[in-house]
Image 1 (cartoon, one colour):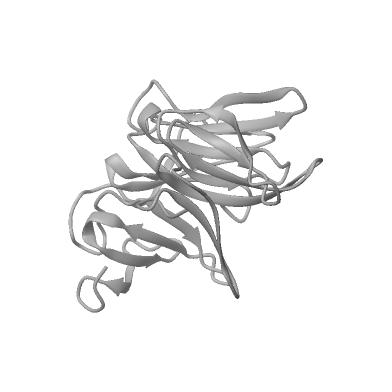
Image 2 (cartoon, rainbow, N blue to C red):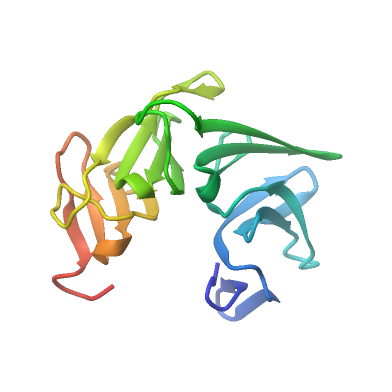
Length: 212
């Protein structure tokens, strides 16, 4: 998702551009549906289903700045709806798509989200949320096909530059093998590895070394 150039790009032996003039695409995932392969793109005020062959796209879910995307084992899509301060599940079927909030909304600080920008699924299927506006990573335990109403803070929670702190993190992934969290600590201009059960992260890239 080439946000600044407002386009989606596939990089291989050759570079292929899927359309110009996208409304600030933020994330993209590859998915298999009953109709075949597709790309799901969060851009502007919606999540778009893009056909790589025809390069045509349809809006499958609306949001207020949808950002990070993740696919559940069922094939349903999770996306961080940053300016609606929630995480949404979108399941598309013939004739339309359903939209359901699965995290965020009213409640205490353990429940509320503030500008979530990334989501990932933990090894056991639990939901990990990059709660950017509150400088933390939350884990919502999975139970059946739902997630706990209250999230557990597993990284950060305090704004600052220390390795135990975060500053508006906007990217999140699991490290293969170790299962550690890789965090794009955006306003600290660094990439952190946060191992399970630790109280602080490890600097992998940025700030004191290579610049981000």
